[in-house]
Amino acid sequence: MKTHKQWKDDYKQMRFPMGVFQIRNTVTGAVFLDSSLNMPALWNRHQFQLELGNHPDHELQAAWKAHGRPAFVYEVLIEVQWDEAHPDRDYREEVKALEQLWREENPLS
Image (cartoon, rainbow, N blue to C red; front, side, top):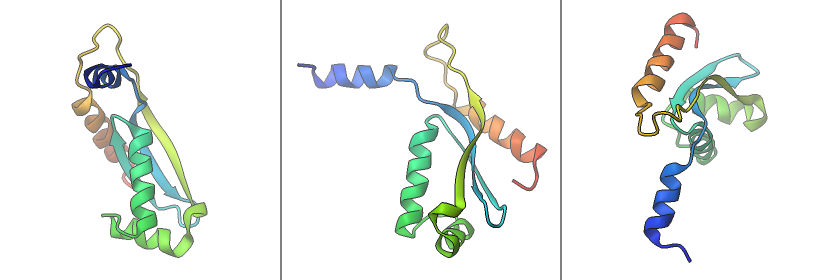
C-alpha cells in the first residue's frame, strides 16, 4: 500500500492540460476568458460556482441563470505543452502572459 508521501509524489508527477480557455454563451456570443495550469479542474470549478449561483463574475452568473447550462460551451484557445526536458519549469507566468496576449489580440473576449 502506498504511503501518503508516495501519493503526494505521484500527484506532483501528473500532467494536466494547461493554457487559455473561454466559456462562451452560444445565445449572446459573450465570452468569459481564463487560464490555468489545470484547465479541466478550473472549468469544473467555474461550473460548480455557476450552478451554486455564487460565481465571482456577476455578468456570467446572470447569463447562466437566464440561459441555463446548455447555452454555454467550454473552448480551449491555447494549450501549452509540457517540456519534459525541464520537469521543474514553472508555467504560471507563461500561461498568464498568453491569456493577456489573447485579450490584447481579441478585445471582445
